[in-house]
Length: 494
Image (cartoon, rainbow, N blue to C red; front, top):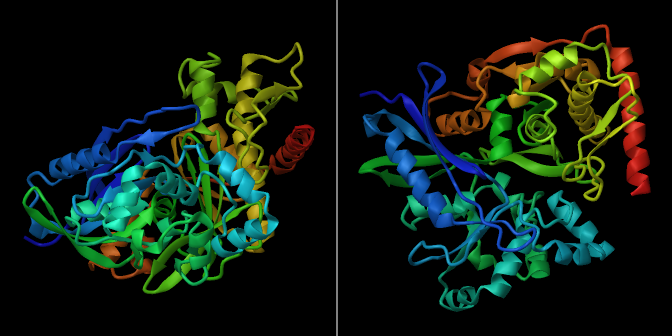
């Protein structure tokens, strides 16, 4: 049989999926998935069971490969939630403590104390492109080392391993033969120097993390090793963090390409080429990927609440009965009648960075209807994206070529057109909604010869629909200024 398929793992926060990408049909043709659990032992803590994650992924790999011969598989790629940390026994491969999820805030007080030291804060920002936060992996690892007794014993026996989810899955898939990670995941740990592409001794010393418990760093397109899945041998190669994988799935290979994923939140990444812009203090600088020894960087910003705002309108506020109804209601009125919404159920992300502010409607008059409120909520998400895009352009001095989007909110035509008018850019909606799985399939295909080069992948990227700026741009821009002034006023008061 001739090679045809690329197998991919997409290890998300609440579910895991395995997919087959058919290189001949240029499409994802088979997927299997499972929900995974989270636990909340204390206020602000979020734990996961790494053994459960591994078991669900292996079960789904077996299902996805059913009736597929190993000779038909080019290889296996992996994409994953990025900052979640696993600690395990090098000898058995078993986790020794619950994985600490990226959402966990148990180290928040420690990070605030560390951030009060201007010298350390500047050092970390300049070397890693990140702000000091419990979101990233370093403080989680420090906590594990200090609070898990078994970690001390295993370290003394040279049997302690610690890493992000990609390194743990690779370790299990190769039965302990390979303990590696790659730069897009490593750059989210706050222990990685994005300039030289290695673990940094000064950062490791700040957090008290021994280098020898961390994985070796290889290129994102490295051939890593072989996995045996239900008796079938499959080569592993092509690994990316989930948002970077989405950037690749949207074929954002050139400087100025930007992608936005509208999920629960909204994640924007701008390809800034091969020079990091670490002077940015309102955006994160991260590694997009390292391919063929060359690093591509991205600016990253996130809106904490996007799709969650729509779900809130449906499930809690009962402004809509179905998600699709939001488009109809928004189009039924010419504007919001001055009503503004602040989408801050869990604070405001980039570029405002205010975790204490909360959501609310403003400027409501007696003439305001349900339609005005719904439209105001949708507009607020678009405004939040606009604030990030403007900051990215100011920081990078890079002209954005177009905006490539995926995720649930792209089904709303009012929202898509409003976002295009607001940004003054074309909005390209991907025809394949699973851009994260697609991206790592693309990369794995490059590793194992299914695709020739990036130009080949550009031809495989398919656009579902396009929104182009209309004549409403000036009006929309004025309304954005009004919303932005409100946000600035609220954040200053806060």
